[in-house]
Length: 355
Image (cartoon, rainbow, N blue to C red; front, side, top):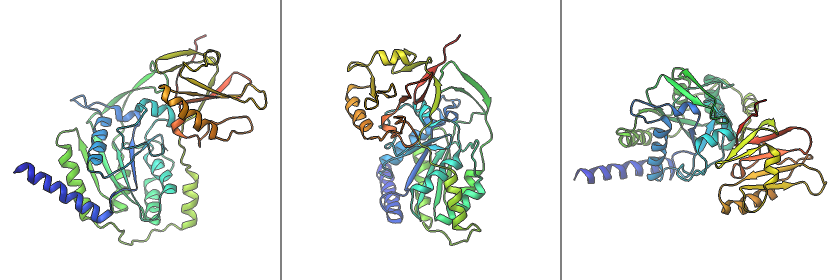
């Protein structure tokens, strides 16, 4: 009987959610994958574990189709519901950067959504280095008619040891900043809802309560005005471009590790290209230059897909196909312009050669 009542409660909650919002309550679900989310609680559960549990719960209730990952203010394109992400989170950080610039990540979403939209943020709420304040962002959200909800996850840790996404030997321990009140301010000012989840105990009931309160709350703004004009808001949004990938320039001599294979510099990579390796090289054959774009794949079935994507990308004058518009599905990737000892890389673990 208790199980029947629980299932009936869930059915009522989901029915109320769908009645209030349609099939899905949020237009965008943003999940924080910064290294700060790797902190462990006393039970060994990380904040990423808690966030993943939240995503799986929402997916099981058919309340989301896809999520967008963010770190360092950069946001990925939708990558599925979280259960089919091809990259480990450490790999994602190599692609989109690190740090937790929540405000910048939210601002970058404004260009992707229509008026009267709703965003869910799943994060530990620890803001670092955003270029826009929560007060200004709240005004932007209200002007655009966007409401923000938040699930703040916490392991209860006060310190964290972070390993570099690029060099596993490089790590740093530091005291964590206190939870940034800005996310709470944004939620409150846009008339959204926020909950805090500590650990995975009773997490399902906590989220169900959150969903229930969400369904009861009005889905429309109260109509309060904000003192920010449309022209200024557009300039602010344009200033924070929705960067999708983190690209760095390194020496061609660096050692690169991919899928357990270590390559000793660019020359080593160029020497092993064939159908049996995990490397696909796109040479600039038309101009007979040494410029090339190098794509990596972990499974043979990925090769044809990545090759097709690579052929559809229009190169720059220097035959570069790696920039902020490069589809995340083709990464990780290297671009070499054919001269000199520098190359651009994205999404790869590298180690500088000691002299």
